[in-house]
Image 1 (cartoon, one colour):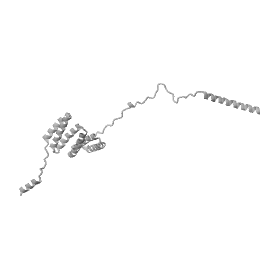
Image 2 (cartoon, rainbow, N blue to C red):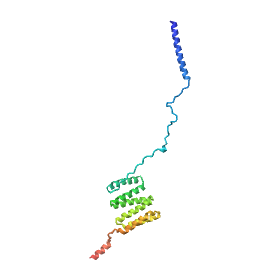
Image 3 (tube, rainbow, N blue to C red):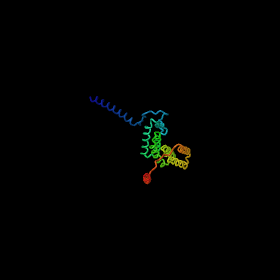
Image 4 (cartoon, rainbow, N blue to C red):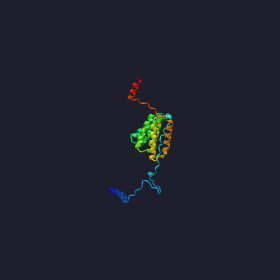
Length: 210
């Protein structure tokens, strides 16, 4: 019985020592890391060049129909733009908005409103030193005033526009100004203002009448 147990323990010891030898030999070997993905020669990831990105599509501006049946809608759009530009102090753009509103009011024979908006536009264009716009505003103002019967004031605006064009060497406006002056002088009649009767004249008239 002892002999059998001795043979059994000897076999177990031999198996354990063999396993330990295999483990120790594996630890002595250098660990070799295998790549997670095998690289294929000649294939690389292209770098993204942000300078050569395709351009963004341009947004087309909304073209407003200025025909008679859509004047009210166009007026609302331009008025909103003018309010926005005035709020954020984009005065030069607001000046052009006011001129556009005036042109729409002229189409509707709303001369008083057109005149008011042109005066606002002209005040801004002077402050912004936009001489071209100022001259065009003066020409438009002269046309409106002539249609309202204020011929003398209209001619004064044209004289001012002429002097500014000469001073700034904007000769492209001179022909338009000259034609406007000729047209107003030939076709427009000054507004007839009622004569004013003063108190002394009224008393004298009363005495004469007695």
